[in-house]
Image 1 (cartoon, one colour):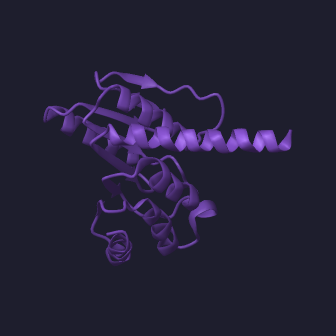
Image 2: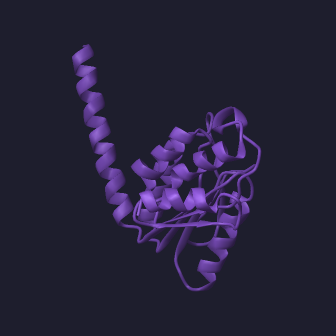
Length: 182
């Protein structure tokens, strides 16, 4: 029974990865918003600006009230049965692909640096990542210093994409990470 469960699990993982790639290919532009504060506001501002320019946009915020802004510009509160989980990003990718959007704007929902990296590299493969700021918060998960926090946030730097950061003492650190990922 153990071998059978292992085979089923491996099959499930393969199918899930194929579906993620399929949904990702249907969305021309993905913008991933990360940082310590201001992610939800930034996500909403980007959504509004792109929508105003005529793009079909799907967005998700994860702040105090996790919310989807669908392609019809309707706010839909996300009702979670348990704790937040990065697998939610897969569901958003699927929903956005089914709505045939031009742009998907997602707020990063992972605090753990490894989960941030997995979310970017295995799920989203964003074209653009925005890091709003680096502040002393989430130190239990991300690091004890501002530099460690910046390095953790840099895990969402896209490969072959664009990284947008504010003018801060960490521009060189972010530039180095961006150069590593082209």
